[in-house]
Amino acid sequence: MNQLRRAFLKNAGAVGTVAVAIAAGLLKPGAVFAAAWNSLAFTAKDPAEAIKNAGYSGAAESSDIVIKAPDIAENGAVVPITATSNIPGTTSMAIFVEKNPAPLIADFAFSNGAEPYISTRVKMAKTSIVRVSVKAGGKNYTSSREVKVTIGGCGG
Image (cartoon, rainbow, N blue to C red; front, side):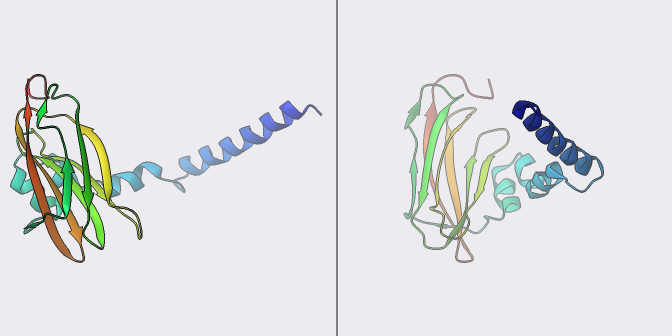
């Protein structure tokens, strides 16, 4: 028998099995991801409400959170933000942009031993405070810096 035909039939059978399992409700990949999404925090319009709903309220200012972002962003559509937590036992980090229509930008969870470092690009509506909040050792910490936006952005 042709080896290519054999490989094709084997892979088609595996795909068919997975499709049947999804259809029968045995596999629910979308439901798993949706369960981890905090809709209250991500849909909040007020920064204080987003921070509270994300579980970062009552955070103490910390110089152990290092935020790297441009002082002036020439294009608000792509603002690079990098954050590192030097706080031992960091389990999660979140980025908030206070004047955005939806202030919570991202919330990252770290497994045991993972380096608490994030790097992303965010869309900013206008000049605003960028806040990074951290959960570590059962306590919340925060640090912030202002980023000035000259053009573009998500708010017009």
